[in-house]
Amino acid sequence: MKVSSMTRRDFVRLGAGAVAAGAAVKSTLLEPAALAAEGADRIIRFASIGTGIRGCDLLRAARQVSTGVCVGAADLYETRHQTAKEAWGGEIPTTSDYRTLLDRKDVDAVFVATSDHLHRRVTLDALAAGKDVYCEKPMSHSVADGQAMVHAVQAGKRIFQAGSQRVSSILYAKAREIYASGRLGEVHEIDAQWNRNSPGGAWVYPVPADASPQTVDWASFIKDAPPHPFDPVRFFRWRLFADYGSGLGGDLFVHLLSGIQVITGMNTVASRAYSSGGLYHYKDGRDFPDLLETVYDFPSQDGGIQVHLHCNQNNNDNDERISFFGSKGTLVVTGQSVTFTPQDVTPHFESYGWNGMTVEQRRKGEEEWRAAHPEPPQPVGGAESFTLPKGYNDTADHIANFFRAVVTRQHVVEDEVFGNNAAIGCHMANYSYFHHTVAQWDAAANKIKG
Ligand SMILES: NC(=O)c1ccc[n+]([C@@H]2O[C@H](COP(=O)([O-])OP(=O)(O)OC[C@H]3O[C@@H](n4cnc5c(N)ncnc54)[C@H](O)[C@@H]3O)[C@@H](O)[C@H]2O)c1
Image 1 (cartoon, protein in one colour):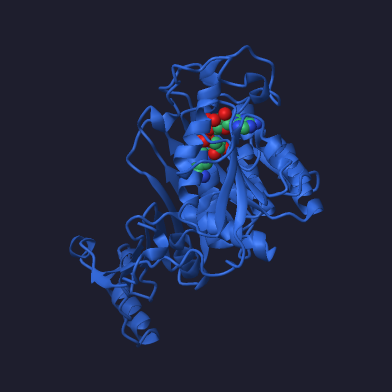
Image 2: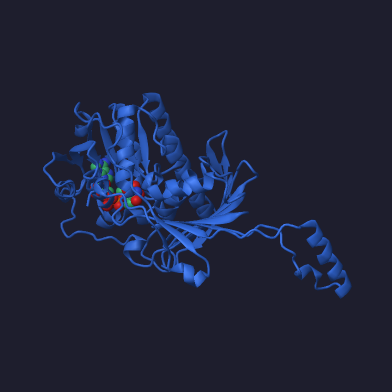
């Protein structure tokens, strides 16, 4: 079903959790916005560069967005030319050399869904050809790559969007609204987790039988990486290797950090990050740990925020979850829901501290306390929960926002600065893990130092 065709079904009901928790949970189904409502006075002609797992997802999602049409696709593995056509659902010109797409005057914008190490090259070439760019996350493979990309976007006055699609999700918009309302009070702690427990979740992806130097343009794949003889495992499981991928930091931390950035409005880089972790199960020659934990120190208006990210590829107890711990309440964002639980912060007589006093001292203390607090405690409101409608696709919303920006020339939320900040968070996590030190962000030098 097309997201844009969903009917308005905004209803309130008592959640099942209400009984267990002993308090009512007001639960609301969120309503998707019409995808092509504004900025639809022009159809964006885009080409897709990299049509593997994510590139195909982008093409499938783009079918829901009526403001854009795919006019070409490029991939280094020949068989994926057919995959691209299947994902788009129609005939499109395909090539192994993306530069031929950039030469075309009828291409307004490109999607870049290559392995991380080629984001910079493909994006810079596309910008130089005057195209706007939607580049998958993590925006960069290194701090230097990100800076070159930011500079090129700004110098060329192009529209750029990084691909953490949750930034455009109606769920995250609701979380942002609750956060901005001040109902959480002061927030100094954020915890985010994303676990998986399967080979696919640990990037052990299929290596197709027809993979060979004849079907894969290996030379182009390793252009910005150290020389290496053809290796289909490196090509199809590039996430395992630091030459091409960015580990859990680039795969999952970037989504979590982007979510934190958009919900809090804290579009900046942490001052420090400390990582711990290890490679415990997937000892298949990979460079990255399968468990990574990082604590970040972020500056904030009211003093600072500690952000704790952790991803474990050997347990699936917690899927995707970001928790914001405030002095007046807690906000929890999962893959499908946002829940705000207020805390009882009205003053109460706290008897515990009087346990070491005489009966008379306690009686007097309580009497004085009650005289100072004549108002009865106010009842605390119940928890509120908001859930996504079935079939909602945040990638379609993200693409629609990009197409709209290509028309209006207004920045998207997840622009080059936002995307670069989130990617630097990933690089700081990896720096700390691999160097066994606290990673410090030197903002003046635009560098990570140990
Ligand atoms: N936003 C998300 O939720 C999400 C999900 C998955 C992946 N991603 C990101 O998308 C990107 C691609 O990941 P994937 O899982 O699709 O990888 P993949 O290996 O399945 O696909 C990458 C494709 O890019 C192609 N490619 C590489 N260099 C190219 C070049 N120079 N020209 C043309 N094609 C080229 C490869 O041939 C390959 O088919 C990564 O950066 C990844 O982090 C984002």
